[in-house]
Length: 309
Image (tube, rainbow, N blue to C red; front, side):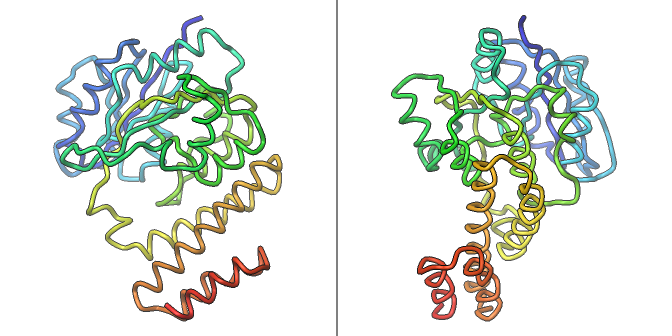
């Protein structure tokens, strides 16, 4: 049976880029079942841009509630049996849906799918590819040995993926029923909400399909919130991962390990951000839990690095 894909595009003040995102979905080599744009309380012409596409796009308008709520609203309204997501400033490769849909049609045992993608700046310059820049991605590329498709199913692969995943939201394909069952993206978190959902999804998956070719483009913005206020972003990252750590107590061991590894790195990143802003005491306090979680030279060195700046 051929899967029917609903593509959800959350958009907030995205009038300048939304048309490009929509066109990348409309131009897919495997036609999608529907395109749903969720205007999350925009103050610009975002809704007008979506309306220009007529019946080709379903527009949902809601008060500003954040990207997680926007994605969830789109998923709730979707009528396809598979969901894919795309942020309004990114775009899909022409065969993004086909790569996943054709594989799903051949193999009904896949719980979800992901894949590689490109990083580009706002001028379109290629900055790199995700799988090559993440340990988990390189692990899967080695397993694939040049093949386009590879299945992630080994404990070490899953732990590495949770700790530092290579597949962003716009490369994820998930059954709508599973998305709804898991509760979708968590509300109330501004950073790392995608990791929160992805980890819960992985915890309930056995076979994850990976496409070792670029499925789309993630645009790096120099003025993003993460870069404007790295301390606030890293604090929020730790807060989201703290909630995920609580949930991870009932996850399979490889997923728990991945969450612990990700939290370990998040605390160090927060310490570095605080140190760069001149808050050395706060930086030390941020990384001290690393020593409690994993006593040893590596954790001690992290604490000392904050003390010495």
